[in-house]
Image (cartoon, rainbow, N blue to C red):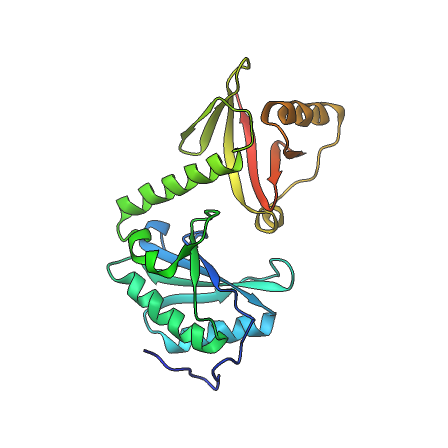
Length: 243
C-alpha cells in the first residue's frame, strides 16, 4: 500500500473529505466514458481539495488525471475528479487510492454511489458494480438511469413510463402519453449551476408548469427558456417537451 507523500501527514485532512464518493457520475476529460472510470470526491475547502489532487497525481502513477472543480458545489465543498482506465482490476486500483486517502482523512469506512444513484453501497460491492467493458458500461449506466427516474417519480400517480435513449414517455391514467427529452439530471447544485437561460414567468409558461404539476404531482416545476426543471428534494431533472 502507498504511504502518504509530499509532506502530508496522517489525518491532516481529517473531516474534510466526505466518506461517500461517486463512480461514473461525471464525464471524462481524458477519453470516452466507456473507456475511463471517473471518481468524484467532495472536499471541504479549496486548498484541501488542491492538496488532495496534488497527493493523488504525485502518488499514483495509474491515475490518468486528477482535477478540482472550478467552483463550490455548495456549503464550501469542492469536487475532486479522478480518472482511471476502465480495465480489469480497476477496483483494486481504487482500493489502493482509498487506502491513501483514508490515511489522509481518517476515514475508516468508505461508501460509493454509482452513476448518480440515490443509494450508496459498501466498498465490498465495488468490484461487482464497476463495469470493465464498453458493453458492460452501457448496460450498467442504462440500468442506473432507469432506476433514478423510477425513484424520482415514485410518488407520482403515473401508470407507467418508457425510457428510450434520452427520451422518456410517461403515461398517467385517463391522460394522453407525454414524451420528454432528458437534457440533464443530478443534484440541484450541479444542474442549476450548468443551467443556461432564464426563468420564464409569462402566462403561457406559467400555465404549462401548472399543467405539468397536475400531471406529475407534487414537484416543483419551473420553465427555463424551452426546458422544464423538475425538483424533488435535492435532485433535479431538466426536461424538454417532445411532440
